[in-house]
Amino acid sequence: MKSSNNAQDNLLHMAHVHDTATIHPEAEIGSNVKVGPYTIIGEEVKIGSDTEIGPHVVLQGNITVGKNNHIYHGAVLGVNSQNTKTNKGVSLEIGDNNIIRENVTIYTGGKNEVTRIGSDNFIMAYCRIAEGCQLGDNIIISNAVCFGSGVIVEDRAVIAGLCTVKEQVRIGKIAMVGGHSRVDKDVPPYMLVDGHNPLRIKVNIIGLRRNEFDPHLRKLVKKLYKIVYRSGQNYNIEESISNIQEQIDSSDFGPEINHFIAFLKKSQLGIVRNKSD
Image 1 (cartoon, one colour):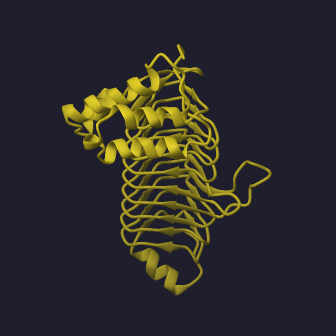
Image 2 (cartoon, one colour):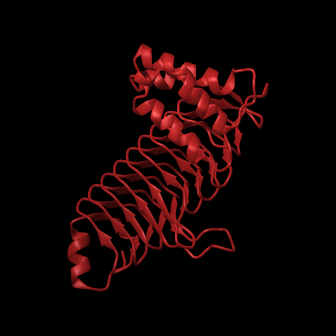
């Protein structure tokens, strides 16, 4: 362990740092942090208490890591983007209770963007999260998923292994993306998509049950799906929203339905479509 002042020595005494780790004197290390062999922690890094960092991890740039995270060996967090036009990193913010597995790469935001990872997420091995991505909470991302810059993933979404998600795509709350999929349009909340474009799309029934959607609310989500995807017409977003407002009783417009409509209204790339559409 390399350190150059008494304050830093006292702070690191509160942590569990392997002798071969290299920590910049200006880095802020919380109490009961564990740092494995040959890990490198840069000048601007801040790490919250009870976080465990494995061997051969690199944390560089302006990074804030919250409490009780577990970062496995070989992960590289906070380095500048590979995008040669915007590779000057700004910052990376990571919440609490995340599991970041082996060899994950997360870049700092480019230009004026910030890359944000929420809390209670499980990011599996070899994933790549590009600059400016915004991840919510309780998300599961399986092995070797690749996010382009500016991808937004809302709470409790699930992305299966070996998926590629194009720049600026939005994946809605409690949505699921099947393995090996290529996604270049927005995935609305509560939907399950699978395959290469055009995708196969259906309601994420298992996800709704796991998130305690009652039978009536599940029925409403199925009706949303039929309006948008099974109407026999390839409606655009504005037409789909109008049809939802006409065909679903106003008394059923709770937070879930309103969130679905708000998601559609914000779509810049359009939404994914079925193979039959």
